[in-house]
Image (cartoon, rainbow, N blue to C red; front, top):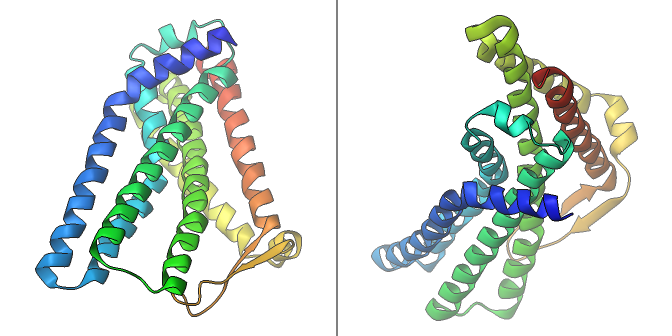
Length: 245
């Protein structure tokens, strides 16, 4: 556990510049909301940059993981670590998850402060606004986690192919990504997917914000979890058995 903690601290140090820049950007977005609200005399405009900032966080974890992998410099030095690839990769993912949570919390804090200072919402609208935020934030983190596993497996595939086909490895990796996503979407559009995944429905209503209720399915989350774990383990296997060798 102590060795893994050291890995985690190292990964934080490798990516802390990106993390701090992200926090500064969150602050600048908060200032932008004030400018838009006052320049256009429309308080609702402040939600536009805030919503965009939240949406952009879907690339946060893959970005942090990628920067961490690139910052390692010499791949052979990283692979010489006695711990298995599962632990090495898990450290980078955990670091990215911690950072995205802190970043979203800071954005939430900025948003709440700005809204409270600038105008008062009627109680139902206020309640729905923050309930929607607590619904959206976990899903942003979930999507970001999934994208990070796709990024890692493509990175590992690229490292493997680079040893075999040289400069065309990026094209082969990109082709594999397109093919995999195409097959994934094809399966999701099938009747089999709907039959297997459309269970455990939960309905969320935010009547003052969205006219229609939002439904989620436990089966969909289960499918995504299988993909996340499968891609993560595939990445670790590629690193341990193909890239390292």
